[in-house]
Image 1 (tube, helix red, strand yellow):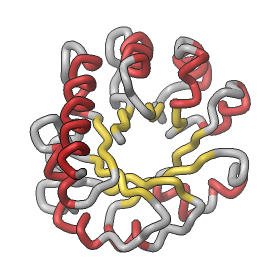
Image 2 (cartoon, rainbow, N blue to C red; image 1 turned 45 degrees about the horizontal axis):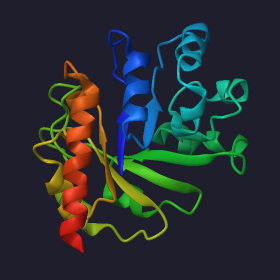
Image 3 (cartoon, rainbow, N blue to C red; image 1 turned 60 degrees about the vertical axis):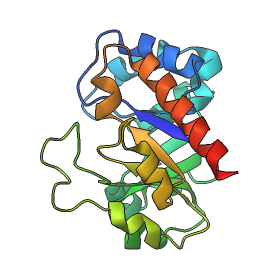
Image 4 (tube, rainbow, N blue to C red; image 1 turned 180 degrees about the vertical axis):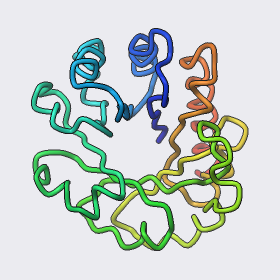
Length: 202
């Protein structure tokens, strides 16, 4: 599985690129815009093709899910998960969360479909983050069979196979894909590499 997370700052014609990626094999897209007003978030989401909204995960603005009946996935960061914010949505949505240590990941229960584990490598979108505290080597300590582990942080085309080989169930792209002139072509290349990797596992 490859997931794309929205960039920290706005990318030119961003919703258009999201639609193109969803049309070209992107499995899930995380809308993560904590700083956006509800008005701007609604405008952004309204520009996503209706037929693709089941692939949208609200990483922020959870309350707007009621405005888009096609959105069925919500993501909660570790702070909100510990506070139990997900409880008001549990049962009605497919839930995912974020973790920052393999111990934290292994303690998750079946409430969660998958969880990000980060930083796998030094972050691309947050310079300096993950230099001394990355969790790449810890992936192999995964012993939670109920939740898929999705690697996040510094993952790009050149190193994605290393993350999968280590035992990750999938990867999330953020800085690497939004640094591209054409995010869709980059995604296609990553999906092709993923398909080859899966074929080698047979």
